[in-house]
Structures are given as structure tokens and as C-alpha cells.
Image (cartoon, rainbow, N blue to C red; front, side, top):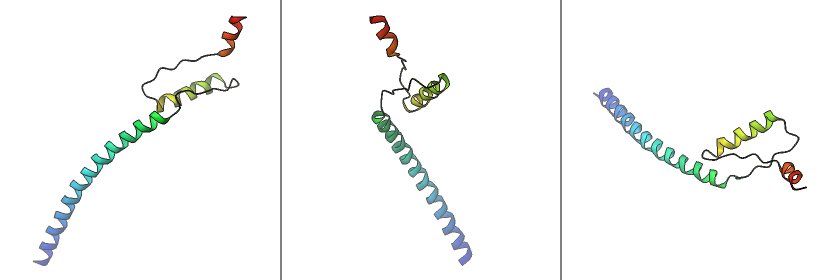
Length: 87
């Protein structure tokens, strides 16, 4: 009798734990999304690239920037060309 009562209590605790963890998971998921949006807003919106970087390194920097800024358009600007055109 004691064993059956113990097993029922254990099953009840497992079921309650399951539903509590499901609620906690939903809460943490929503919280994570809010934190990601907040950190995206704080991240720099402009990145200065060193002229000595190779094309592959520039592409990697752009890829890394796009991962943290999902809804952006990337424009690459070379200041030297503009100064040459003004002369």
C-alpha cells in the first residue's frame, strides 16, 4: 500500500514538474526574444573595416554583422574613390 502511494505521489510530482517546466520554457523563450531585440538595438549600426583586409575577411565581417542585424541592408563605401572623383 505504501509503495503504491509512493508511486502515485512520484507520478503526480513528475506531471506537475512537466507542466511547470513547460511554462518556464515559454517564459524564457519570450524573454530571450526581448533580450535579442534589445541587444540588436544597442549593437553598432556602422562598422569601419580596415583597408588591409582581404575580400574574404571583409565578407566574413559582413556575414557576422548580418547575423546580429537581421533586417538590414549593407552598403560598402570606399572613401578613396569619392576623394579621387572630387579632384
